[in-house]
Every structure is written in C-alpha cells, then in structure tokens.
Amino acid sequence: MSGDEVTRDPAGRLDALWEATRPVEPTTQDWDRVWGAVSADLDRRKDLIVPGPTFGFGRRPLAVAAAATAVVLAQAAAILLAVSLSWPTTDGGPAAPARNQVATAEVRIEEGQFVLIRSNADAVRTIDLTSHLGAGGVDAWYLAYNLLEAMTNPVVAMSE
View 1 (cartoon, rainbow, N blue to C red):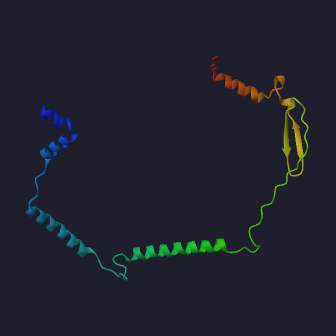
View 2 (cartoon, one colour):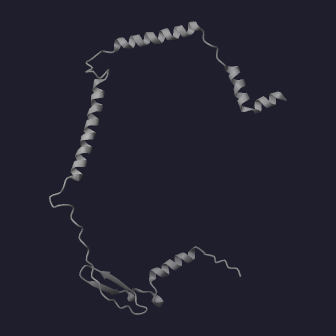
View 3 (tube, rainbow, N blue to C red):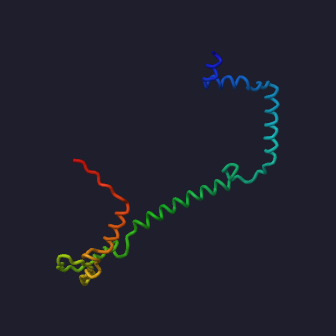
C-alpha cells in the first residue's frame, strides 16, 4: 500500500522521477575542460574586437553620445514648451469666449397640437407638425416603436 501513497503524492512522484533520471555529477576534470573551452572562446573573441577611439565613454562611444544627445534634446524641448506656455501674449491674455445669443419668445401651444420650436440668435420659429401625425393624432414613429415593443412579447406578472 505504500507504493500507492507514493504515486498519489505529487511531490513524491516528482522526487521518484528525479532520482530515476538524475544525471551523473560532472567531475572536476570535466569542469576544468568546459571552463578552458569557454575562456579560450572569450580570448579569441577579444582578439576580434578592433579598439577605436573611446573619448572616455567606454567601449561604445557612439551609443553613449547618442543617449546623451537624446537626453539633452528632451530637456531642451521641455524647457521650450514651458517657456512658450508661460510667455505673455500680445493682447494681454486669451480672448474671452463670445457668448452665444439666443432669441427668446413666448409660444402658445394648443392641446393636441404637435410643434417643433427652433431658436436662432435672431428669431424663434414654431413649426406645426400636427399634419404629420398619424391616425388618432399620434406620431407615426410612436406607433412604430409600439409595434416593435409588442414584438418582444412582454409578459406582465401580477399577484394579489
């Protein structure tokens, strides 16, 4: 029964699998051979690098110079933006927004009348839309909406 407990325990299964597939530890001679190959490859690559002028910036003077130039340009742009936003304008400040003028009027609407009221800056117009109403004095769009709403089959649940 102990074998069943080991196979059911995930940690036990992982340990058993590791013990079964564990690689052999490398010897010190193997480590020395690997390290010798790595260091020889590094020495060979060191001979391939052609030294150039460093200008005191290390191995990559162009990359450092490009990064420094980018930082300086970003700072200059930020300063220019701050100065241009705080610089006073010639007219003493931003112009005040013009007020929209709207005409007002008293409109009388009779019961059952369907009207549209439009107001411009100079006049108020009242447009009578009663003639556009459908049967029974109801707007045709309200009838269409009512028809579409009825298609959804609403159910009213009541209890007393």
